[in-house]
Amino acid sequence: MSSLLVDRIGRLVSHDDEAPVSDAALVVSGGRVVWSGSRRQAPPCDRLLDADGGCVLPGFVDSHTHLVFGGDRAQEFEDRLAGIAYTAGGIRSTVAATRATTTAELAARAARLAAEALRSGTTTLEVKSGYGLTVEDELRCLQAAAAVTVHRTLLGAHVLPDGTSAEDYVALVAGPMTEACAGEATGVDAFCETGAFDAEQCRTVLTAGVDRGLSVHVHANQLGPGPGAQLAASLAAASADHCTHLTDDDVTALRDADVTAVLVPAAEFSTRSAYAPARRLLDAGVVVALATDCNPGTSFTTSMPFVIALACRELGLSPAEAVEAATLGGATALRQGDVGHLRPGARGDLVVLAAPSEGWLAYRPGVDLVRSVVRNGEVVRNGEVVR
Ligand SMILES: [Zn+2]
Image (cartoon, rainbow, N blue to C red; front, side, top):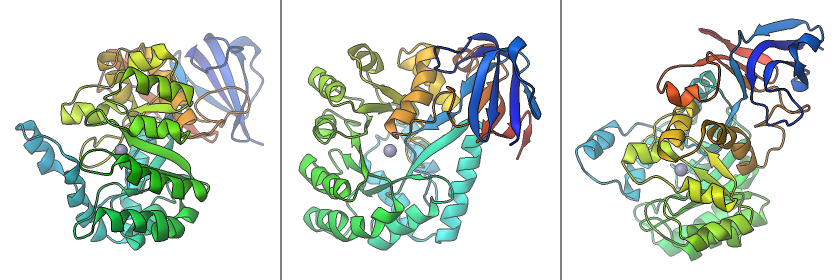
């Protein structure tokens, strides 16, 4: 079994209380972390990755993306820069473009974005459907994501398609669509928002997913106050995502129900919206995750380093808190216990920075500080060479 020694680690962020923080080394074998400790005690290994005194982090876990879509919305973005407000209806233009794109092309586009994400250190990601809005097209979107990730979420209740009533469409999503798509998905999601779906409609859709064994996620309280966070809590959801407009009762409900708050500050950056109350959530004891929300309308970035920089600058998180949210927090939102940390037994997913600490991700925003990426124990990026 081939082993990899990551040596000369200047600073090790492992989320492992037993591991050293500085002057460390780490061994991956069989795709798993098997050892970390002082580099002077490192065992011999088959292969070497020299961290050159840089900071080593767990691979990023991006727990909220919409990577499968056709077309782009660059013009809408420029209109927004000129002062036109974002509404949930903008999703419909991507629906038309997605329906007109073959499944093979959707898969190829998603794979390109996933490769871009991997280059910046994302070793685990979630992908939602939600731009098909028919049984056939939602199924195609989930199938297109299959080569990219196991974490696939049915988001049939993204926006009401043209030419149907809310009542009929919710019945379609909760019935035939969930039945057809459950085998291709691990989660179910709904956009609980004015202009999208109300709490009862979302509850109908999400409950149908629960009945099929899917984990629950809710697009909650993005554009204004609303019932999304409370709905997520009442369903013991894995995550409530966005969480921009929360009352104190919402925060308490999320904490008491162990719902991870997935914050997506790149969406707020792109739409020039208020940022989520990350400090209130953390101080109340809610588990916080950071994600890109990568989508063509409101957050067309795959970069977790950018999201970490925003979290430090705009959400009031320390670099250590931001990295924890972008790794362990994401893993909690996806209910996957072997990623997001580097304890023995963890998947061999890690990032080597060309910088001495994680704080440099915010200190040097927009600069590619990822020197190496390891996924499943394989070096998939080293310097400028990307495999
Ligand atoms: Zn989203």
